[in-house]
Structures are given as structure tokens and as C-alpha cells.
Amino acid sequence: MTASSELVIGDPPTVASAGEHALIARIRARLPQPPDWLIAGPGDDAAIVAPVRNELQVVTTDACVEGVHFDRRFVPPSAAGHRAMAMNLSDLAAMGAEPRYALLSLLLPDALPLGDFDAILDGLLGEAARHQMPVAGGNITRSPGPLVIDVTAAGTVRPRRFLTRAGARAGDLVFVSGTIGAARAGLEMCRAGGGSAAADPAGPASRYLRPDARVRLGLLLGRRQAATACIDLSDGLADGARQLAHASALGIEIDAAALPIDAETRRWFESRGQDPVAAAVAGGDDYELLFTVSPKRAGRLRGVERLARGLALTRIGRMQKEPGVTLRREDGRVEDMPGGYEHFWR
Ligand SMILES: [Mg+2]
Image 1 (cartoon, rainbow, N blue to C red):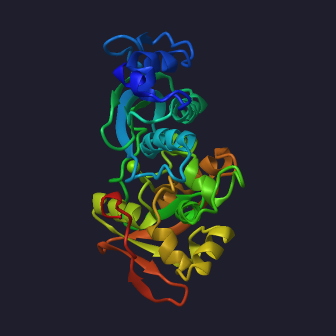
Image 2 (spheres, rainbow, N blue to C red):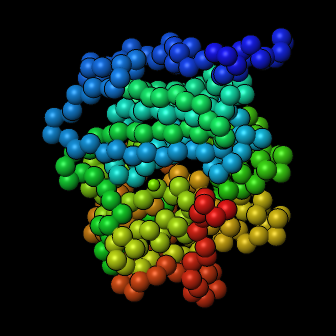
């Protein structure tokens, strides 16, 4: 706690001035009563979790690094927390898993204001609570560089009810949930100084700042065995389609005219001189699900659709034997799918 003596009176309190133990106490004070199956939870050396009988465990981890995955100049701390939790929930959704618990690892720069720390927790814990996913433990450490919010999430799924990227067959229909490209448009709006989630909770900026992981859809697709393969679009539709095609050892043809791109997103890309289709398929952070359905099981998908609470499921293409991912344009031209989105090379 030496840092506190260096503080000028009147400065806002920082995480360094609070110290690690106080920060952990701050988190624990906000956690709801742990469930019975969490035999040892936050505060012990490790969590002890009772397994769910006859269910498989699904585990994922994803770190959000300031300067790589988000920019603190326009991503408010609560949105940084929300996004970090949502991207892990989205990975569970893609596997058809029900969220069970999360672990947090927070790497904090000394100068991070305590108010920002609390706001990061608002985003993380709010999103976890919305999916009834308790935080089972975690770790806080100083970062000499960027703020890092690292989340591990575990879920459960019944045997033969999970989804992977690898199960698609030639002739399967390709579907995507919701709309694509809005998060990229929202990121561009935020960068340009015009985007905030408060302005329009359904607009592109909100889609970027507060993505909604498609957990319910993933569960329905898995439980009803409606999908043959599934992936979440964390890195955009072009990248997701390539990953799914590769894992299934097939190709995909996507129909550009069928892609669900909302009007505001389309207008934004057009106003910036970009081709809306190319921009939308290359844009990351959609967190929609891309999945394949056997034509014989179209009836099961209609059942899923009825329970999906208004979430649109749009047929956008077909799996084919020939490898590669192509885009059929409205004029009938077939071209290679434009580039994906890789955080490392942005
Ligand atoms: Mg994923």
C-alpha cells in the first residue's frame, strides 16, 4: 500500500491506493449467495465445484486486452466488463452449453480509478447474473501495461446434445441469427466520437458496447438437435464461415442478398464509401451464431424459431463439397469471401 503515500490530496482513489485485499473484498461484497453445488467459492485458494450428473463440462477462456480488444477512450468501463463476460458466454452458446460458473482474472494498471474498477464489475457481474452464472473465484494483479479482463467460463451440456464446428454435411443449409455488421459499424461510430449505448439501446453502438450472447438459441439448437454444426461470430461472418467450412472439411456458398444487415448499419457503411456487404461480413464482434441445418430437419428449426423470443434466424447459404467460402452477389457473380478479422493484425 505504498502507492497511497504518493497520492496528491484530491486525486480520485485508484486501485493501487485501495490495494489488492480491499479490491477482492469489494468484489466479494457484491456476489450473491453461492449455490449449494459451489462447495468452496471465492475467498479460498481454489473453487470446488460439484459436477452435474450425466452432463459434460464445457470450458472456455477469453481475455480482453486494452489496446487490442477495446479502447478505453470510447469504451466505458462497464461496457469493457460486459463485453468480456459476453464473449465467453457466446463461446458457451456456440457449443450448446448452459452457463454454470465463471472465473475472473483482472490485470489492473495502478492508476485505474476505483470508480472505473467498480464499473468494470457492474458490467461483468451484471452480465453473469443475467445468465444465472455465479462467479466461483478469480485473481487480481497489477499490470505494468494495459488493463486486461480475462474470463474463464464453464457450462454443462448433455452427451449428444452439444454442438461443434465440425458436423456439417454437403447440402446443409447455413443460417445466421440476428443481424451482422452492426458491431463493426458501432465501433466505427464510437471511434468517430458519435457512438454511445445510452443513445440507442438497439443501435449499432450498443451492439458493439453491449453485445447479447445467444445463449438461449445455442441451448435450443443443441437440445433439439436442430443444428449439425455451430460457431459464434466473434471475429465476423467471413472468418466464422471459413472456420466452420474448414472444420467440416467442406465449402460454403453465402448469398449476399440474404445477409441480414440492418438499415442503419447499411447507411453507415455507405456514408463512409464502404461496400455494406463486404464491411458487414468482415466486421468482428457480432456474437451471433452461424449454424448449419440438414434440410430434413428444417421442422426442428421451426420449433427452435418459435422459442427464440423473436430472434431472427436467416438462411444465408448452403454447404457444398468444393472447399472454400464464396459469396454470391446479387448480380450472380460468385467471388471469394472478403477477408476476416484478426485482432492481432488490426
Ligand atoms: Mg468462438
